[in-house]
Length: 346
Image (cartoon, rainbow, N blue to C red):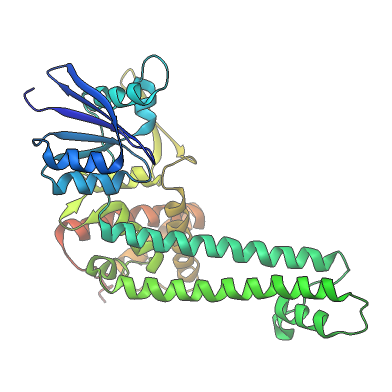
Protein backbone atom coordinates (compact mmCIF):
# COMPACT_ATOMS: atom_id res chain seq x y z
CA UNK A 1 0.00 0.00 0.00
CA UNK A 2 2.93 2.34 0.61
CA UNK A 3 4.44 1.73 -2.83
CA UNK A 4 3.26 3.95 -5.67
CA UNK A 5 1.95 2.36 -8.85
CA UNK A 6 2.40 4.14 -12.17
CA UNK A 7 0.23 3.17 -15.12
CA UNK A 8 1.90 4.13 -18.41
CA UNK A 9 0.05 4.43 -21.72
CA UNK A 10 2.72 4.41 -24.43
CA UNK A 11 2.53 6.19 -27.78
CA UNK A 12 5.01 7.35 -30.40
CA UNK A 13 5.27 11.02 -29.44
CA UNK A 14 3.58 11.33 -26.04
CA UNK A 15 3.40 9.10 -22.97
CA UNK A 16 0.64 9.33 -20.36
CA UNK A 17 1.62 8.52 -16.75
CA UNK A 18 -0.93 7.99 -13.98
CA UNK A 19 0.57 7.65 -10.47
CA UNK A 20 -1.62 6.07 -7.77
CA UNK A 21 -0.85 5.55 -4.08
CA UNK A 22 -3.26 4.17 -1.48
CA UNK A 23 -6.08 4.18 -4.04
CA UNK A 24 -5.59 7.90 -4.60
CA UNK A 25 -4.57 9.40 -7.94
CA UNK A 26 -1.55 11.61 -7.26
CA UNK A 27 -1.03 12.72 -10.86
CA UNK A 28 -2.12 11.87 -14.38
CA UNK A 29 -0.08 13.86 -16.86
CA UNK A 30 1.41 13.68 -20.33
CA UNK A 31 5.14 13.62 -21.09
CA UNK A 32 7.43 13.29 -24.06
CA UNK A 33 9.65 10.16 -24.24
CA UNK A 34 12.72 12.14 -23.13
CA UNK A 35 10.82 13.67 -20.21
CA UNK A 36 9.51 10.26 -19.20
CA UNK A 37 13.01 8.77 -19.21
CA UNK A 38 14.21 11.64 -17.01
CA UNK A 39 11.20 11.16 -14.73
CA UNK A 40 12.06 7.48 -14.27
CA UNK A 41 15.61 8.39 -13.28
CA UNK A 42 14.50 10.94 -10.67
CA UNK A 43 11.53 9.08 -9.16
CA UNK A 44 11.74 6.84 -6.11
CA UNK A 45 11.43 3.06 -6.72
CA UNK A 46 7.86 2.16 -7.61
CA UNK A 47 5.85 -0.36 -9.61
CA UNK A 48 5.56 0.77 -13.24
CA UNK A 49 2.94 -1.03 -15.33
CA UNK A 50 3.06 -0.70 -19.12
CA UNK A 51 0.37 -1.66 -21.59
CA UNK A 52 1.77 -4.31 -23.93
CA UNK A 53 2.72 -2.75 -27.28
CA UNK A 54 5.63 -2.45 -29.72
CA UNK A 55 7.85 -0.33 -27.43
CA UNK A 56 6.83 -1.79 -24.08
CA UNK A 57 9.84 -4.12 -23.84
CA UNK A 58 12.25 -1.22 -24.29
CA UNK A 59 10.59 0.91 -21.63
CA UNK A 60 10.31 -2.07 -19.27
CA UNK A 61 14.06 -2.62 -19.56
CA UNK A 62 14.68 1.12 -19.04
CA UNK A 63 12.51 1.24 -15.92
CA UNK A 64 14.24 -1.79 -14.42
CA UNK A 65 17.64 -0.19 -14.98
CA UNK A 66 16.44 2.78 -12.90
CA UNK A 67 15.52 0.50 -9.99
CA UNK A 68 11.77 0.23 -10.57
CA UNK A 69 9.66 -2.91 -10.70
CA UNK A 70 8.31 -3.01 -14.25
CA UNK A 71 5.42 -5.14 -15.51
CA UNK A 72 3.53 -5.55 -18.78
CA UNK A 73 -0.23 -5.97 -18.93
CA UNK A 74 -2.57 -7.04 -21.70
CA UNK A 75 -4.16 -4.25 -23.75
CA UNK A 76 -7.33 -6.34 -24.09
CA UNK A 77 -7.71 -6.52 -20.31
CA UNK A 78 -7.16 -2.77 -19.99
CA UNK A 79 -9.89 -2.07 -22.55
CA UNK A 80 -12.42 -4.06 -20.48
CA UNK A 81 -11.48 -2.21 -17.28
CA UNK A 82 -11.46 1.30 -18.80
CA UNK A 83 -14.43 3.47 -17.86
CA UNK A 84 -15.83 6.50 -19.66
CA UNK A 85 -14.41 7.46 -23.06
CA UNK A 86 -11.13 6.32 -24.57
CA UNK A 87 -8.51 8.92 -23.76
CA UNK A 88 -4.86 8.64 -22.79
CA UNK A 89 -5.67 9.69 -19.23
CA UNK A 90 -8.45 7.11 -18.88
CA UNK A 91 -6.21 4.43 -20.40
CA UNK A 92 -3.39 5.16 -17.94
CA UNK A 93 -5.82 4.99 -15.02
CA UNK A 94 -7.29 1.73 -16.34
CA UNK A 95 -3.79 0.22 -16.50
CA UNK A 96 -3.33 0.87 -12.77
CA UNK A 97 -6.77 -0.52 -11.97
CA UNK A 98 -6.20 -3.66 -14.04
CA UNK A 99 -2.82 -4.29 -12.42
CA UNK A 100 -4.46 -4.46 -8.98
CA UNK A 101 -6.88 -7.24 -9.86
CA UNK A 102 -6.55 -10.48 -7.90
CA UNK A 103 -4.76 -13.28 -9.77
CA UNK A 104 -3.81 -11.09 -12.72
CA UNK A 105 -1.41 -12.66 -15.23
CA UNK A 106 1.12 -10.18 -16.54
CA UNK A 107 2.81 -10.46 -19.94
CA UNK A 108 6.32 -11.88 -19.95
CA UNK A 109 8.77 -9.29 -21.21
CA UNK A 110 11.68 -10.05 -23.53
CA UNK A 111 15.36 -9.41 -23.12
CA UNK A 112 17.39 -7.55 -25.73
CA UNK A 113 18.80 -10.88 -26.98
CA UNK A 114 15.30 -12.34 -27.37
CA UNK A 115 14.16 -9.21 -29.20
CA UNK A 116 17.06 -9.56 -31.64
CA UNK A 117 16.25 -13.21 -32.32
CA UNK A 118 12.58 -12.41 -32.80
CA UNK A 119 13.42 -9.57 -35.20
CA UNK A 120 15.55 -11.92 -37.32
CA UNK A 121 12.67 -14.39 -37.46
CA UNK A 122 10.22 -11.68 -38.52
CA UNK A 123 12.58 -10.49 -41.28
CA UNK A 124 12.91 -14.04 -42.58
CA UNK A 125 9.15 -14.70 -42.42
CA UNK A 126 8.40 -11.52 -44.39
CA UNK A 127 11.01 -12.40 -47.03
CA UNK A 128 9.47 -15.87 -47.45
CA UNK A 129 6.00 -14.35 -47.94
CA UNK A 130 7.38 -11.90 -50.50
CA UNK A 131 9.16 -14.70 -52.38
CA UNK A 132 5.98 -16.76 -52.60
CA UNK A 133 3.96 -13.72 -53.69
CA UNK A 134 6.43 -12.81 -56.45
CA UNK A 135 6.65 -16.38 -57.73
CA UNK A 136 2.86 -16.72 -57.78
CA UNK A 137 2.54 -13.43 -59.66
CA UNK A 138 5.05 -14.50 -62.32
CA UNK A 139 3.27 -17.85 -62.79
CA UNK A 140 -0.14 -16.18 -63.04
CA UNK A 141 1.04 -13.52 -65.52
CA UNK A 142 2.70 -16.09 -67.78
CA UNK A 143 -0.38 -18.31 -67.58
CA UNK A 144 -2.35 -15.43 -69.16
CA UNK A 145 -0.28 -16.11 -72.30
CA UNK A 146 -0.73 -19.90 -72.00
CA UNK A 147 2.84 -20.31 -70.69
CA UNK A 148 2.72 -22.83 -67.89
CA UNK A 149 5.21 -24.41 -65.51
CA UNK A 150 7.87 -26.89 -66.42
CA UNK A 151 9.43 -29.71 -64.35
CA UNK A 152 12.48 -29.01 -62.17
CA UNK A 153 14.65 -30.90 -64.65
CA UNK A 154 14.05 -28.08 -67.13
CA UNK A 155 14.75 -25.30 -64.65
CA UNK A 156 11.28 -24.89 -63.16
CA UNK A 157 9.97 -21.33 -62.97
CA UNK A 158 13.43 -19.89 -63.58
CA UNK A 159 13.73 -21.84 -66.82
CA UNK A 160 10.34 -20.62 -68.02
CA UNK A 161 11.23 -16.98 -67.38
CA UNK A 162 14.60 -17.28 -69.08
CA UNK A 163 13.17 -18.99 -72.14
CA UNK A 164 10.38 -16.42 -72.36
CA UNK A 165 12.85 -13.53 -72.23
CA UNK A 166 15.25 -15.11 -74.73
CA UNK A 167 12.59 -16.15 -77.25
CA UNK A 168 12.62 -13.42 -79.92
CA UNK A 169 9.66 -14.91 -81.82
CA UNK A 170 7.02 -14.99 -79.08
CA UNK A 171 5.78 -11.49 -79.95
CA UNK A 172 6.31 -9.86 -76.56
CA UNK A 173 7.20 -6.17 -76.54
CA UNK A 174 10.30 -4.76 -74.92
CA UNK A 175 8.40 -2.94 -72.11
CA UNK A 176 6.78 -6.24 -71.11
CA UNK A 177 10.12 -8.07 -71.24
CA UNK A 178 11.75 -5.37 -69.10
CA UNK A 179 8.94 -5.54 -66.55
CA UNK A 180 9.09 -9.35 -66.38
CA UNK A 181 12.86 -9.21 -66.00
CA UNK A 182 12.60 -6.65 -63.17
CA UNK A 183 10.02 -8.77 -61.33
CA UNK A 184 12.14 -11.90 -61.65
CA UNK A 185 15.24 -10.05 -60.44
CA UNK A 186 13.29 -8.90 -57.40
CA UNK A 187 12.35 -12.54 -56.75
CA UNK A 188 16.00 -13.63 -57.00
CA UNK A 189 17.05 -10.85 -54.61
CA UNK A 190 14.40 -12.01 -52.14
CA UNK A 191 15.73 -15.58 -52.35
CA UNK A 192 19.23 -14.28 -51.59
CA UNK A 193 17.83 -12.32 -48.65
CA UNK A 194 16.31 -15.50 -47.23
CA UNK A 195 19.68 -17.25 -47.49
CA UNK A 196 21.32 -14.31 -45.71
CA UNK A 197 18.72 -14.42 -42.92
CA UNK A 198 19.25 -18.18 -42.52
CA UNK A 199 22.98 -17.58 -42.09
CA UNK A 200 22.29 -14.83 -39.53
CA UNK A 201 20.02 -17.17 -37.56
CA UNK A 202 22.61 -19.94 -37.67
CA UNK A 203 25.25 -17.55 -36.34
CA UNK A 204 22.94 -16.08 -33.71
CA UNK A 205 21.92 -19.45 -32.28
CA UNK A 206 25.57 -20.24 -31.56
CA UNK A 207 25.57 -17.42 -29.00
CA UNK A 208 22.71 -19.03 -27.04
CA UNK A 209 23.52 -22.42 -25.47
CA UNK A 210 19.86 -22.93 -24.52
CA UNK A 211 18.85 -22.79 -28.18
CA UNK A 212 21.55 -25.25 -29.15
CA UNK A 213 20.38 -27.74 -26.54
CA UNK A 214 16.77 -27.46 -27.73
CA UNK A 215 17.80 -28.45 -31.25
CA UNK A 216 18.46 -31.99 -29.97
CA UNK A 217 14.68 -32.54 -29.68
CA UNK A 218 12.83 -34.43 -32.41
CA UNK A 219 11.41 -32.13 -35.07
CA UNK A 220 13.05 -28.98 -33.66
CA UNK A 221 15.04 -26.94 -36.17
CA UNK A 222 16.77 -23.58 -35.79
CA UNK A 223 13.51 -21.64 -36.12
CA UNK A 224 11.62 -23.88 -33.67
CA UNK A 225 14.49 -23.73 -31.16
CA UNK A 226 14.53 -19.92 -31.25
CA UNK A 227 10.74 -19.69 -30.94
CA UNK A 228 10.75 -22.05 -27.95
CA UNK A 229 13.55 -20.04 -26.35
CA UNK A 230 11.58 -16.80 -26.79
CA UNK A 231 8.36 -18.38 -25.48
CA UNK A 232 9.74 -20.28 -22.49
CA UNK A 233 12.53 -17.90 -21.52
CA UNK A 234 16.10 -18.62 -20.53
CA UNK A 235 17.24 -20.98 -17.80
CA UNK A 236 17.46 -18.16 -15.24
CA UNK A 237 14.07 -16.58 -16.03
CA UNK A 238 11.34 -18.98 -17.15
CA UNK A 239 8.00 -17.49 -18.17
CA UNK A 240 5.75 -20.31 -16.93
CA UNK A 241 5.22 -22.09 -13.62
CA UNK A 242 5.20 -25.57 -15.14
CA UNK A 243 5.22 -27.38 -18.47
CA UNK A 244 1.42 -27.72 -18.58
CA UNK A 245 0.96 -23.95 -18.69
CA UNK A 246 3.46 -23.70 -21.56
CA UNK A 247 1.68 -26.39 -23.60
CA UNK A 248 -1.71 -24.79 -23.02
CA UNK A 249 -0.36 -21.38 -24.05
CA UNK A 250 0.83 -22.74 -27.39
CA UNK A 251 -2.49 -24.52 -27.95
CA UNK A 252 -1.53 -28.20 -28.20
CA UNK A 253 -3.82 -29.31 -25.35
CA UNK A 254 -7.60 -29.91 -25.44
CA UNK A 255 -9.90 -27.05 -24.48
CA UNK A 256 -11.35 -27.56 -21.00
CA UNK A 257 -14.87 -26.55 -19.98
CA UNK A 258 -15.73 -27.26 -16.35
CA UNK A 259 -18.92 -26.36 -14.50
CA UNK A 260 -20.81 -27.80 -11.55
CA UNK A 261 -18.03 -30.24 -10.81
CA UNK A 262 -18.18 -31.75 -14.31
CA UNK A 263 -15.03 -31.39 -16.41
CA UNK A 264 -15.25 -31.77 -20.17
CA UNK A 265 -12.32 -31.84 -22.58
CA UNK A 266 -12.95 -30.61 -26.10
CA UNK A 267 -10.85 -30.42 -29.23
CA UNK A 268 -7.59 -28.58 -29.83
CA UNK A 269 -8.34 -24.86 -30.04
CA UNK A 270 -7.78 -23.10 -33.36
CA UNK A 271 -7.39 -19.55 -32.06
CA UNK A 272 -4.31 -19.23 -29.86
CA UNK A 273 -1.73 -16.52 -29.22
CA UNK A 274 1.16 -18.54 -30.64
CA UNK A 275 -0.43 -19.96 -33.77
CA UNK A 276 2.74 -19.69 -35.87
CA UNK A 277 4.82 -21.57 -33.29
CA UNK A 278 2.19 -24.30 -32.98
CA UNK A 279 2.05 -24.69 -36.76
CA UNK A 280 5.83 -24.96 -37.01
CA UNK A 281 6.09 -27.45 -34.15
CA UNK A 282 3.37 -29.65 -35.62
CA UNK A 283 5.01 -29.45 -39.06
CA UNK A 284 8.30 -30.61 -37.54
CA UNK A 285 6.49 -33.36 -35.65
CA UNK A 286 4.76 -34.50 -38.87
CA UNK A 287 8.18 -34.93 -40.49
CA UNK A 288 9.27 -37.14 -37.58
CA UNK A 289 6.01 -39.12 -37.69
CA UNK A 290 6.27 -39.63 -41.45
CA UNK A 291 9.82 -40.93 -41.17
CA UNK A 292 9.03 -43.17 -38.20
CA UNK A 293 6.07 -44.79 -39.94
CA UNK A 294 8.49 -46.25 -42.52
CA UNK A 295 11.01 -47.78 -40.10
CA UNK A 296 11.33 -49.53 -36.76
CA UNK A 297 11.60 -47.45 -33.56
CA UNK A 298 15.04 -47.05 -32.01
CA UNK A 299 14.22 -45.30 -28.72
CA UNK A 300 11.57 -45.67 -26.04
CA UNK A 301 10.03 -42.38 -27.14
CA UNK A 302 9.77 -43.66 -30.70
CA UNK A 303 8.07 -46.83 -29.40
CA UNK A 304 5.45 -44.65 -27.70
CA UNK A 305 5.04 -42.57 -30.85
CA UNK A 306 4.80 -45.65 -33.07
CA UNK A 307 2.04 -47.13 -30.92
CA UNK A 308 0.21 -43.80 -30.93
CA UNK A 309 0.38 -43.66 -34.73
CA UNK A 310 -1.22 -47.09 -34.96
CA UNK A 311 -4.00 -46.15 -32.52
CA UNK A 312 -4.80 -42.53 -33.50
CA UNK A 313 -3.30 -41.87 -36.96
CA UNK A 314 -0.47 -39.52 -37.90
CA UNK A 315 -2.01 -36.09 -37.30
CA UNK A 316 -3.05 -36.86 -33.74
CA UNK A 317 0.38 -38.36 -33.07
CA UNK A 318 2.06 -35.20 -34.43
CA UNK A 319 0.08 -32.97 -32.05
CA UNK A 320 0.95 -35.26 -29.14
CA UNK A 321 4.63 -35.15 -30.08
CA UNK A 322 4.51 -31.32 -30.28
CA UNK A 323 2.95 -31.27 -26.80
CA UNK A 324 5.69 -33.54 -25.45
CA UNK A 325 8.34 -31.41 -27.18
CA UNK A 326 7.20 -28.27 -25.35
CA UNK A 327 7.09 -30.09 -22.01
CA UNK A 328 10.54 -31.59 -22.55
CA UNK A 329 11.96 -28.22 -23.59
CA UNK A 330 10.60 -26.62 -20.41
CA UNK A 331 12.16 -29.38 -18.30
CA UNK A 332 15.50 -28.94 -20.07
CA UNK A 333 15.55 -25.18 -19.50
CA UNK A 334 14.34 -25.36 -15.89
CA UNK A 335 16.87 -28.02 -14.88
CA UNK A 336 19.68 -27.05 -17.24
CA UNK A 337 20.02 -30.58 -18.62
CA UNK A 338 20.76 -32.04 -22.04
CA UNK A 339 18.27 -34.10 -24.01
CA UNK A 340 19.23 -37.72 -24.44
CA UNK A 341 16.81 -40.18 -26.02
CA UNK A 342 16.67 -43.50 -24.18
CA UNK A 343 17.65 -46.30 -26.53
CA UNK A 344 15.77 -49.58 -26.59
CA UNK A 345 17.55 -52.22 -24.59
CA UNK A 346 17.83 -55.67 -26.10
